[in-house]
Image (cartoon, rainbow, N blue to C red; front, side, top):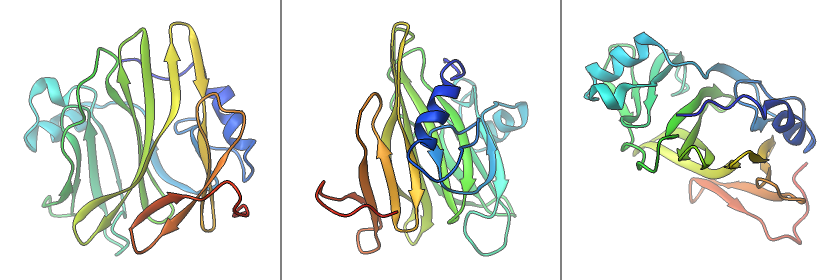
Length: 210
């Protein structure tokens, strides 16, 4: 698994260029929102907790863990994520509130590279998939809903091909976010659709949200 580091400064500059402030260095693909808790560092505690909730030793490798109020009820949940386990959300008693399936195996660079709770409250998860020659980082946003952990959006924010890196990112706005695909010269505008419980891309002719 490859940890993202060399391109962080350029990614931050690209996302900040969408307007709305400077992102966290641990989650450089997401700006315009308050990061409540974030990690990009695997820990022994996260691996032990992943094992305790059904992961194999291989699946628990590289696990990340954060604690915070994801449900919005003032309680502190524990969120564990690893590529082979997926994402699991635990309530304060250790009961599993929600979980996702494991991420699809694609290559030697597979791994969860960042895990955060941001304003919303929303869970932000950056996952790298592929090999050491070619790989892609996808940033997904989730919320706890009636049917568990709901995916609000999942978009590529960084691409690697050999020594080349193409960066992009999201800048949150009051009604959605502005998105720049990796290496793209222009941005697109996305809006939250409460009926569909996800973000949708607006037509190019639509007025910007900010």
